Length: 525
Image (tube, rainbow, N blue to C red; front, side, top):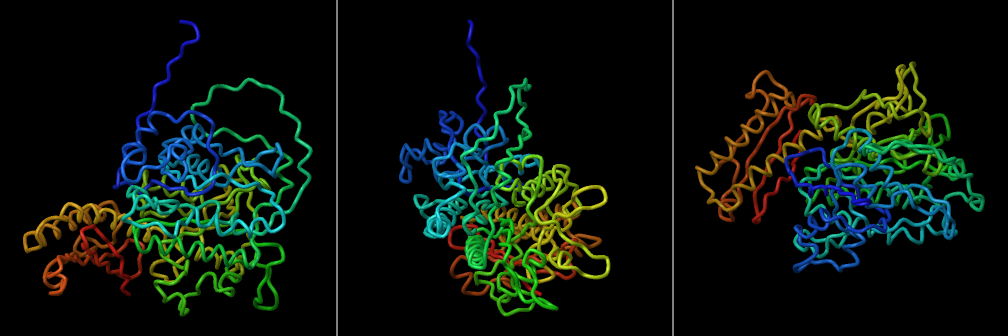
């Protein structure tokens, strides 16, 4: 029959809580005016979003608004979301890419295999009226951070609150955060449209990320830059997100791009005034945005600090073969970091460092960091707290893989991800024992299960020591539980680990309580 074609519908992705490579992107992107695929509709129905006590309105279902959508390829994301339709200005025909779309594109281009998208709403025009960024900041942050979300009420899940129902997610990205907190971008004349490209034959796509045609008009748009108030807003928002993960999702890692500083931003450095762009770590520490080691703020575990073992920051912004459709032709580096960590988890193990990974798609950065062979430069110091992309003799590469923690023992990125993987595996062990009577038989079984799990980590090279006995120890019994614990049905197992990259041992206390599997992390020097 002429004109009849068949397309095989992709099956709905199945959740796998044992994976440590799945990333969740929360932010602003449009929805394509296409019918909702049957597989996506079935996945939403299975999660009870289309019927039941927390069913969403039909228009929100069709718009995929504030709902988790799993995609296993860039083409699947591109078919659902209008990532390339952000207006440059209100009423203008020119469009640019969204930061969320750029992050997801980079994630898949670097080897990521599965992402969960939470669409918080439509993107705003890149150029807004005077004060537009500041006026819309509170509402946009609320849509992403969802401070009112309750772990026990799925009807309240929006933005980051969707993580309560996504145990398979290991990496969390908020790509729009620098733009939400930025100062108003510089205006340009958007009336003139670039000339249309000549029609050429293009082979059918195989689902890979296609090259981007350079739009010279977008080069005249300034990328988002934060002034002092913007950096403070970014810090507070990221600290709020970190606090949510610390309370409910200690097995998840928060990835974030450092904002570009405004040109006039500076701080008082050694020898006089220093521009923030040239010494970003100095500015962050002096402004109280990234706690210095040993400071009082770094000791406040429950504060709004971002100096946490479960936060990895990335810098600088990147010029890639795909970034030409973004303002200033640069993209934030959090999507790249997420893709590298996902690929590393699948190929080598999440606890192994990704430092030194060559970046074939990168050909420049904003700004270009200055290194020194005469002693520690600002870039060297920054690389001890931030994952830095830098030029090397063979091309561009990821120079460092570190967490933002102020504690040196928790600085190595592989150690952070190792503990996330251990907590995730321990949660699966604990979930199977939720409704069993606490007693010697259960305690012994929990010990044996945790020992078997940790032995597997040791065999893969995630733990140090010449033998499992040197690498870890597990205790579960009267010595780890008080009478109050026993009376209230709490089971506590104490695990001591020697990470392969750690200088000293770190003790973790795993706690099974309140009818749910919980794995709070307690750092012990």
